[in-house]
Length: 243
Image (cartoon, rainbow, N blue to C red; front, side, top):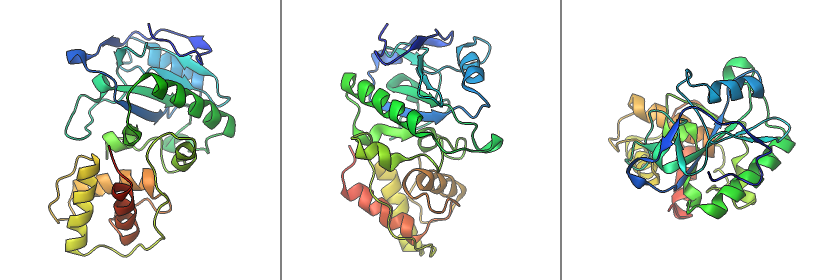
């Protein structure tokens, strides 16, 4: 079992299995627990009846609990897609970050928790060939179904420590996109990896993916409406290179 040296607790989860097709790890997915306490989240994630699991849990004080070995497939991403592949669980390691989530009074992520998370991410990245652009939010791979870890999560802080792919968001300009601009925006999002078809139409999938993109890359306004600031941010992101 591949165990992180940073894991202070090891509590085995019931729901795990070999990675399908011998798939190697090339993604790191960050979640929030959406539960009132880390203890409740750990119980859920380790229960056979829950139908879910995750590799790691980071509580508010920064304590890391490992529940699934990194060589195994945990059940954390659910129905999801990235770059056309839908078995996210077979190619990823998942980290749950204790936070009550939007339904229970969405809170800021404490500094101690973020420092511990950054250290854990660096440790995981040292063992696996995970491109920066494959350090993603649950909402990125499951837009519309999931919104975690949400718009308060400090992606820029992680990027400053060499974790993930991020650019400073473009200046706020919430002007709605013209049809041609919308098509360009959809094309950029699809090229980056999001599950979206470039149609030039403001359809429901575009709303969902735009919402996810805003939560990760342009957090000043999250409303699912494609706008000039989001388009310019996506242009910067792709120009910075996305592996």
